[in-house]
Image (cartoon, rainbow, N blue to C red; front, top):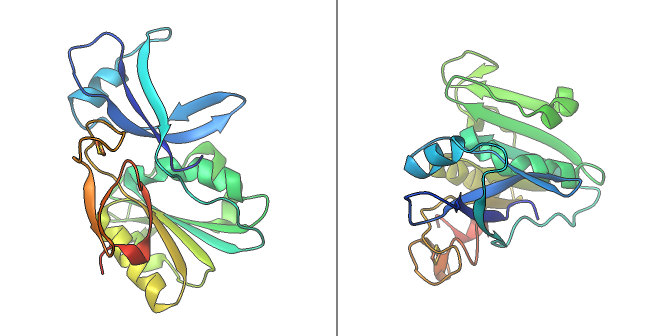
Length: 213
Ligand code: FES
């Protein structure tokens, strides 16, 4: 499902823990993933060649609800938070009206499948290199039935609060350090209105209302 993730590491390497990487797309039996090199684990993954073996656990986590029909839906993405939104957009597009808001610091990355959305994609860059100069939350217009957000916590928090003010359902996908991915180690717990929850097990998708209250 969109929003689910896999724990991954190369079959032969000197790192002990797998890294959580979300599903970027799933088509014709092929799962693809998009990640930013942000440490040793992802740097090693980026050096893999075709036919190298991976140690893979998943799919894990709850994922986004894609059962909606006839709704006006906004996807709000910040930076690498765009990764899980591609498969989500693919899953929702035939039954709903979708607008996509993307924010980057400087360099803009628009996945090929987002290019089909043409006039329905709104871009902000902090540097002003492309689109609106500022944050994605500056251009996000909270006039939807449902909003999905993925990106830095500060961005998702703002989106969730804008949605709450406007009585809009909002779902956010959290990122967290993960050791096991299975709910056993508790490295990924986050605070919610209902107590501590494990991002890998009860998430990574949460109702925005549950968090940051
Ligand atoms: Fe171990 Fe979530 S990563 S409990």
